[in-house]
Length: 271
Image 1 (spheres, rainbow, N blue to C red):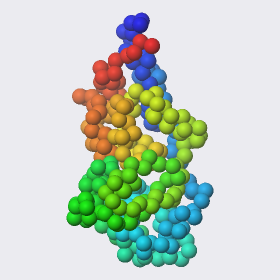
Image 2: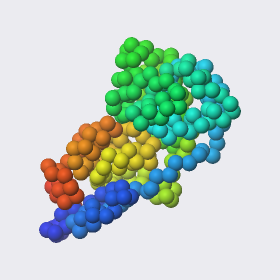
Image 3: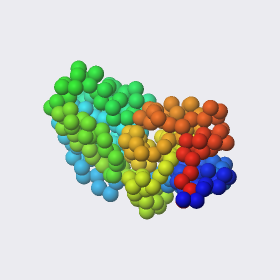
Image 4: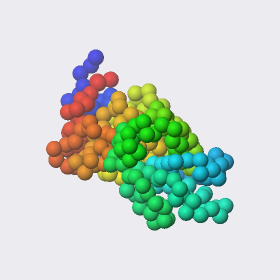
C-alpha cells in the first residue's frame, strides 16, 4: 500500500453531505482527498395509490393508537381524512402520538388532540414513551396501531411495536423521492453496502432533511457502520434526538475545524 500523501489525509474516504453543503465543506473535504457525495434534494409527493390509507381511515374505530412520525405523515393523513367529508373529531376516540414537536404543533393547529410526544425520535425512545404511557411493556399487547408513512421507509418502529405484542398497520400516505429517483436508490445501496465512510451535518435542518429523505427517525440503525460528523454541539444535540450519540464534533465550530476533526478520526486508506 502506497503512503497517503501528507496533504490528502482523507484519500480513499467517501463522505456524504447535504445538497446545500457543496460549498466550503465540499471544497475542503475534496482538497484533503475525500470523495464527496451530496444526498438528493428531498421531494414529498402523493402516493400512487390511496386505497390502504382510505381503508384505514374508514375503519379508525378498529385502532387504539395513531402514530405520526413526522409532519409529512400528519399533513397527508389529515388532508385525506377530510376529503370524503370525515371530521377531525373522529380522531378523538384514538390515542395520538406525535414523534416530534413540529408534528405536535401541526396536529394541534388542525385541532387534533395529541396524547404523547416522546423525548427522542428513535425507536427506543418512542417505545419507552409508549410503554410508560400505557403502564408497561405488557400493556401494549393486543393493542392496534396505525402508522401512516411513506411508500418506502426504513420501518424499525413497526417491528418494535409488534415485538411488544401489538398489531400494527403501516399505510402509505405519501412518497419520498430525490431529485432523481435513481440517485436515491444509489444512496440506499451505498449505505447498505458500506460505501459511505461518513455523513457530515452542518446544521440541525441537515439532520431533519436526511431523516425525511430516507423516511426514518432511527438514524442510529441506518448509520451504525458509518461515522457521523457534526459541525457543533447544537447539531450534535439534534443528531442525538435521532439516536446518533457517537459522533465527531470539533472543539471549535466551523468548517475548517470540522474537516480537521474528521481527518483525525478517519485518516486515509491510501487507495
